Length: 264
Length: 263
Image (cartoon, rainbow over all chains, first blue to last red; front, side, top):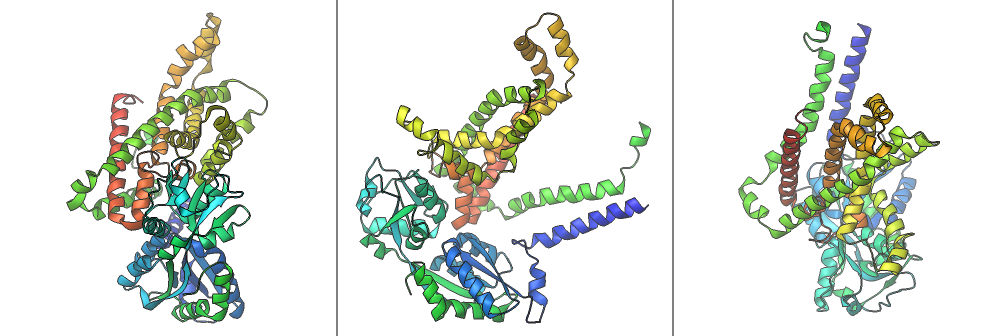
């Protein structure tokens, strides 16, 4: 009898865990973050573009420092994926995207509280392995047929920007691969598998030592804007607005420009 | 025997049903949300057929490679006692627990243009594997082979070794025993392993995109196409997933009827 009860309890609890896990893309108990009204023990959930990983992690730590008991959690990923997760009801407080179009899908769905604010800009550079073995100096060099070039796929912001920059330079580049995000391009260059790739200036900077970033004038034709917005369904709407203000503040700007972002 | 029949106990039926629903419901979701109206036009796109063809071809070659190398490896683990056999078995199963993306990076470190073996391949033969269809096959083989090895090894262990001994006492050499006795006895396990292996290779994403990259017609398999379609056009991603699902179910059901009907 006891055993039967035990088994039923296990089954029931796993069912509950299942149900709890269903609505959640993150591993935290977002229920705990949402309801509690006290000042301590709150969790702020920020969905941010992968290229913001280093900068936002630092800003998050600093923001936590100003509000004792607060925990900032990040979900870094491709902007389009994050936008989808948000419009499908993922419990997020703030969204920072790597392009206006991905933010637009969120605001079009009525999920952004107020007008999104552009907080940073980023431009492309040519990333080459350290020492530049293939002797790449300018964007036009990427069109060389023997060169192994990797780009982001056109479906993701960095790929769209690459396409725009190449079109502005009237160049046709045949990449060996169209990667799913900018970090994947960087990995291929870092390991020397690719002779060159187009990545954001900030990514090249973060990987300095393993890759070299070569600036090119055509990048001015394909500058990415990074908009940020607090979300309408934010469990922590007040904190969400404060975090957005913090990113837009002097401190936020300083951290962003240190990472290689341009101010809007 | 009679006690094993009777009504199935609720403690088993309830979790079994929960499990079933949990597995089937997401698939149902795909069907419900599929854009049935535009299905035809979306399927006719050449990129879809290209990705499908590439997926089927590379998964099949990968399965062949797994059989070629995996069956002897399973035999080694099951039949030849050697020191460190447990360690080797553990190593063989590592790709099972390794995140496929890490597997892809590991492959790059070894077989990449600047990798331990790859650098030599490039210099001596001018062969570079990343960004090629061969790279896709290698990535899939790496991820799928453990499934085959485990399945075949299990079958070999379950098979009665006395038949092999009898064959040996009758004068058959070890290769003959393997070919005429061991392999036929383990056939269901080999087949199950191959099917598992093929399915895993067909769905492979992480190691493939990391090691072989993504280029339509050359390395963009269906899972890669699905992932990128998700970025901009979730409906297209659903269609692609349904195609992959339909094809794999058709192949597996076909195999089951033809070969494993008895198993």
